[in-house]
Length: 108
Image (cartoon, rainbow, N blue to C red; front, side, top):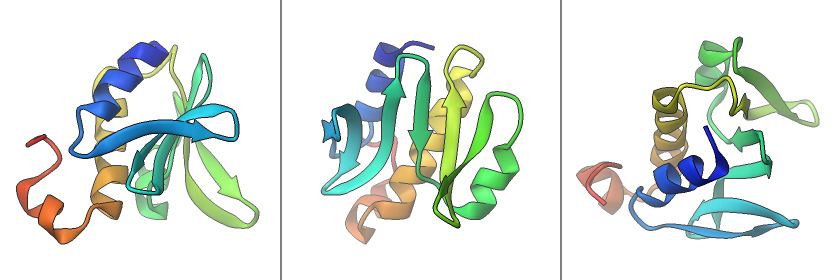
C-alpha cells in the first residue's frame, strides 16, 4: 500500500479530514487523531488494546505511548488493503459521535 492508498481509505470515512501532526500527515475526526502516516512506509493507527493485540504480527506491531498500548504500527509494504481499511474503521468507530455511528463508517 502507498500513502495515497491510505489517504483514500481514511478520507472516505465520514467527516475525516487530513491535518498536520508534528510534521506528518494525520487523519482526524474532529480534533481526534485516528491515524498518522509516520513515513512513506509506516502508518500508525490508534485502536483499542484488544484490537491491537488481535492484529499483532505480520505487518502490525504494537504501538506504545509510554506504558500504554495505544494502537498499532502498520508496515504498508506488507499490509493488505482490507486490514488497513478495517483498522481505520475501528479507529473511526472508537471516536465517532453517536450521530455518526448510527449511520456507520461506510455511509460517508
